[in-house]
Image 1 (cartoon, rainbow, N blue to C red):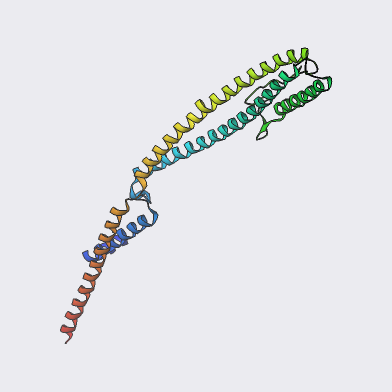
Image 2 (cartoon, rainbow, N blue to C red):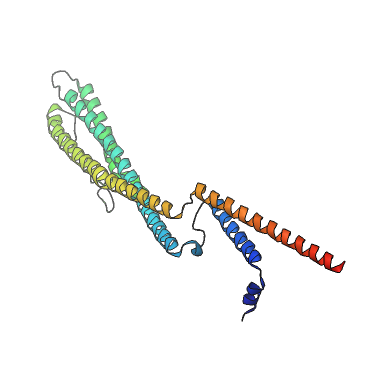
Length: 255
């Protein structure tokens, strides 16, 4: 027989009841302070394992959501740059209409159109070459880029005849940029944002499931806490009453 067993056997029923009430009261306090009904494995081994597995799933989903959000940000930034390039092409196309006016443009005017057009072309090509996101080129068609925009070449507004040829080049560039913008938008909306929305719903459902397993019902637990408190106080009162009675008996015998 072990020492602890001998101690348990030496305890009175009242003492064992008080010890059990005290232990239960401590457990109730721990749950009320933590807000969880499963604080240790003894509170529910199977529930604890299920809860931890759900938490691992939720953690993985949240990381995937963060990754997709980062990709969406990259696509949004790329889309804004493409819109900027489209704006340059629109301006260049409008300029071409003015530069094609053979009867109304002086030599100086034609040269001014040519200079302005070249500045726009240089700006357009610079954006294609140098645009980056997180250190990665995104418009030049290199590995990892999201778009492959062709450079503007052979744009010459020095004469109405050359403007006509340049206008066809500009129109082709507009069609290319518009097609790329459509592709970027479709991927962002139909693949990335749709996937993120689906993952967020799944994560919310798992969070709700995990919460129902682990979270504490405060009202019910507080009722149990009051019950344990009353039981403990009753046991203490009974033990005190018992000790008083024993003392009275001894005094009577000694007298």
